[in-house]
Length: 187
Image (cartoon, rainbow, N blue to C red; front, side, top):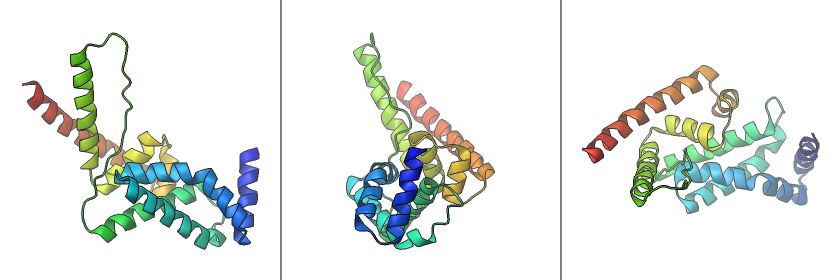
């Protein structure tokens, strides 16, 4: 509750144009915004550009924030739009990488198991990077940030059923791609 009160006070101060409040709100959310942008774009420089663009848009439009959804949902929507805008600007596929599962080295694994685990992780990242943007973004928001379906729906401005459908479709695509690649590598 204290964080919400602090955030609400910062939002009000930002509406009045107070630069210290803008700096504080930026510092409060910059890492999360950068993480979304980086996991979508797969490129640090692009992620920095998207982060900067997102906050410029945030401070320009903060007077329009009505509080109907959570502030984070509203901010993440700005980030998602900035990611899509960046993609449209470049008119080419960006190297898009999203890490869904963090593979930790377990005790007692052999060097061969480590090699296979690294290869599987790389295949997963490559497969996610090749997903269509609408599927890739749902995967990033769900698995990288751990957001629930209803919040993803708010961010993407679509029904929760659409989020579930896109996630299910992404799972099917990834499963098919990974089975095909892993089958060829093991044969």
